[in-house]
Structures are given as C-alpha cells and as structure tokens.
Image (cartoon, rainbow, N blue to C red; front, side):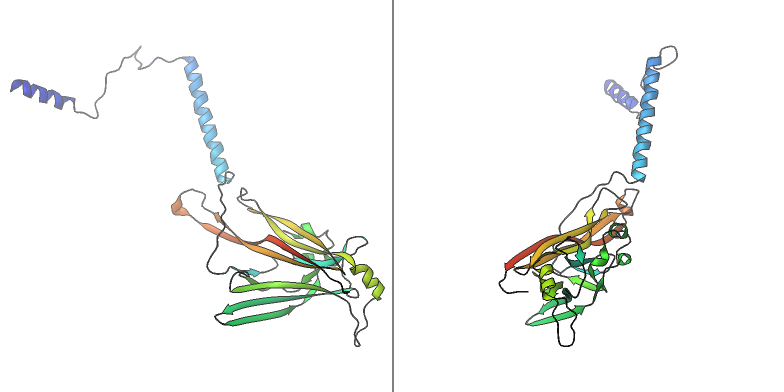
Length: 293
C-alpha cells in the first residue's frame, strides 16, 4: 500500500502546467549572445517591420487587387437605360476622295428608329419610334470621353439627339429592343429640290465607306479606383451601289462589383455596382445587288 501511495503522490507532484523547467545559466544569463547574433537579429526585425509597413501601404492604396470575371445568363432579359454617360457616338458616310466622314443631305439622308418587340403568349407588342438626328456634339459625350473625341471632327457625324431609352433582352428572348440606322440617297420631290446632281451623288455613293465612332470601354480590374478605361470605338465598312451591308452590333451589359471594404473582413463587406455597355460582337452580312441605289 505504501508503494502504491508513493507512486500516486509522485504523479500528483508532477502535475503543474505552470511549472518551470530547470535551465543552464552562463554568467547569470540563460543564453550566451554575440555581436554577430545581435546584428543579424536587428536586421531581421528591421526587415520584417519594413516589409509589414510596405504591405500595409499597398493594402491601404488598394494596389494588390484580387478579381474574377463571370458570364451570367439569367432567366429574365437584361435591361439597361441608355444615356449619354453610358453610350454616345455617331455614324456617317465617308468621302471617297479623302475618307473623312461628312454630312450633306444633298447627297444622302440617314434615318434612325428605335424598336421594341415583346411576345406575350399569342400576342406581339411591337413599338417603333422615329428618332431625331443631329450633328454630334463633344459636350454630349461622357466627361471621361470628351478629351478623346474633341479632335475627331465629331461634328461630321450624325448622333441621336436624345438618348433616353432602355436596351432590353436579346433576339433569343421574348423581349428585344434595338436601334436601326439606315442610309438613303437624296431624292428630289415635287415639294423639295435640294439634291445635288445625280452624277455627283453617284460619285460619292457608288464606292465608299460607312463609319461609326462610339464610346466604349476596356476592362482594367487591377486598377481598384478605375476598373474601366474609356476608349474610342471606330468601325468602318465598305458600301456602294452594288454592295449592301447589313451590320449588326450586339452589346453586353457589364456589371462591375467593387468591394469598398478596406479592412478585409467579410462582416464589413460593402459592394458597389457600376453598369456599363461594351461591344460584344459585330455581325456583317453582305449582299450584291443589281439595281441602282
């Protein structure tokens, strides 16, 4: 019994989570130091804090940005309001002599319409609105684009006078809206004789280009403060008396979500969403025709 008690008593004596293990001391210190060790220790601590401050500054300036992109297809058709801030630009025919855009209703006349089609069971809701055109104005571009377009002779292009419409859906949905732009040669009527001689009209239209000049965006997700970069979109395609072009532009809605939380914890998540329009694809269908324009 005494032996068993001694074993248990020894075990109880060893239980102490706050106990201190014996150490060997050298001249009253638990370790022997050297000048080389001190120097390397100071260098290590200094480097660590310098790196910590460097990473902290980059975090506060949001220089190391993580990003990802996804393509989302929703059951409901997408919808975006068209304003000058999101979409503005012009179109015109080009002078075949110098390939500069020009406006001259004595030679050609553009027409534009806005169309909205919605299929409801067996009924089709069809709306078409004739749009008023005017020479483009630099001040009507978004402020971030005005510097880019002020030297482009934008006044030689036609633009929509008012931009207050909704682009909705896609032709694969039951809801679809679009802009239609057409170009017609000037034709005199009994009420108006403003057209230039047929020979001059023929010289301009028999072999020329149609030109589009719009504001577009480039995605720059690594730039936290400015995740998009404004850019000019210029497209020109040949047209003529014997060549009919059906040019279709499909735009995609780009939603950029930016986490404004600078702390980094999910509990403080603060998402800012910005919506833009970006050219998605261009479809061109050519057709040779025999008759005059």
